Length: 437
Image (cartoon, rainbow, N blue to C red; front, side):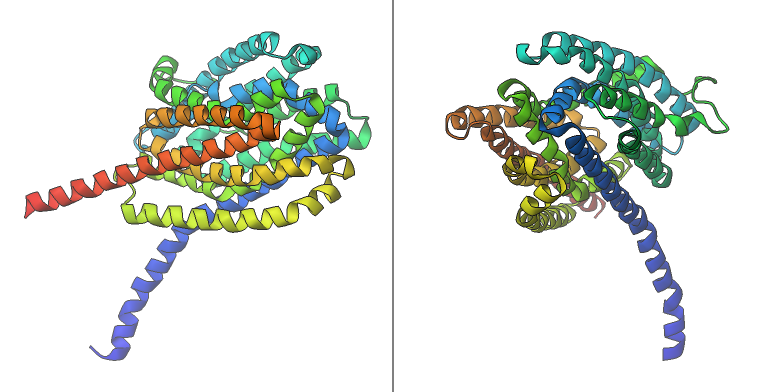
């Protein structure tokens, strides 16, 4: 064969490889872009809340909405992960699965709202109990938020990231856009802000109300609600352990700090949140990969994921810490200058948390949600011990310092689980090859 013929013969193969690479990379890159867009919206939301309510009002809103935030994912009872796993199976009727997701969301919405009512009735400090009525308003937002999460899980599991990303953008944009429009027309108060949150949660459900097939009614050929609840039990326990660590700092801030410091802390959370985006978004794809047959990672692939994630997180965290003070004082105003120290400590916490969430998504995708519970509990205990030791020395900052240590312990534990899973896969492959030979 001549050199010209060899060149021609390799072109289709090269073109196919390039097209295949692009087809795999495009959903990831698009989802990362959408995730950054969502973070920008959340940051804008945080700025609006801080500017419109001030440090005192921002702290009051954080206290009123805290238990609703804590129950948002815990109250799904593992429904998202179970529905994603069903949707990843091409043999499952996804129309019927969406109806099953809707019915499950109704049940979880009612149960979560009742749980939040009880938590707010008995779980607010005495000096903050005047916020109970507004906390009950915030609880109403759980219906819309959980409905959106549950129904969009079908698209996520099926790999329809175009629709999934559109829904995520709408849900993320609804509250800050409403808040901005309201501020342009009327005075913004804590009461109006809480009600706008409820309206925004309803808007996020709108995309599911239009379509050729109703999610509300129709034949039930998919998994039943009791079946989904039963299969979601391990994921629910795992999520409870996860939120024990993820939300423990917010709970301690509620009980240990005055309203104004709680306002400073909560205002800085969306500032540091961009540091979680890249590894967290990768976790969406790792979950789907783990859920599919033969999707287990290799040790080499785990090396690559961890090295690249840690490298990216380190660089972005250093850049963040160099820029955060002038940015916060310019965007939030001088009255939030005391909050800068919180942002500085939250940066490494967020960076590690992003990697942790990405690895945990893969473990859940492998169908092993209970594998992370012990690690989460140990991390929470370590966090509390560090806070207890440091509180006399560093005061409220000890909460974030303890959270940093807890996230580091969690990262080490999850990395060990993922490496063990990958090593087991390679051992099975070697054993199979030896048997064949």
